[in-house]
Length: 137
Ligand code: ATP
Image (cartoon, rainbow, N blue to C red; front, side, top):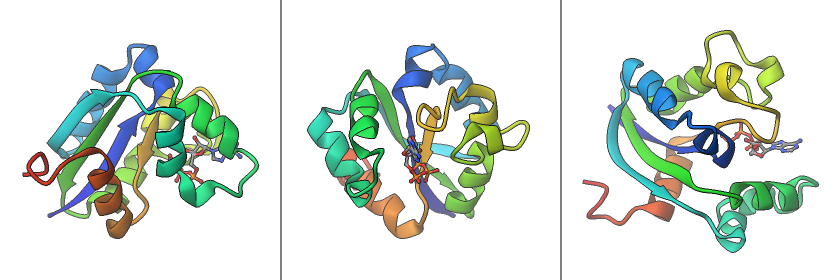
């Protein structure tokens, strides 16, 4: 088995969809390793998304990701990173497959409900951004 990292983003958390999204995640075979409700400052969002800092949407993305509470979680499953990307669907909900989390819950390309790590290496880095070694059991 291995791990991925997810966030339920401010749009989905604010709309009261966290429970429904977590239910889909658990029903798809992912185990919760660590989870918290938290909030990113604009600075912390900027650090988390530093890889995008030259992109035109970076400022908006940092403002959006710091606009309200989120859930951060580490998930465990065989083939976790790829299977979770399949479960959430395409970045733009307009292109997301039927039945995916983004198809059901995302509002737009930016306000797209959830994050999922894109590699094992980034899953570890992103999990460590939010959780201590003790919390990562
Ligand atoms: P995530 O990293 O959140 O799982 P992703 O890997 O599908 O998403 P990235 O290309 O890494 O997508 O973009 C990170 C986030 O930035 C997207 O999830 C979305 O919220 C936002 N974003 C991406 N492209 C755009 C864009 N063109 N305009 C506005 N926001 C965007």
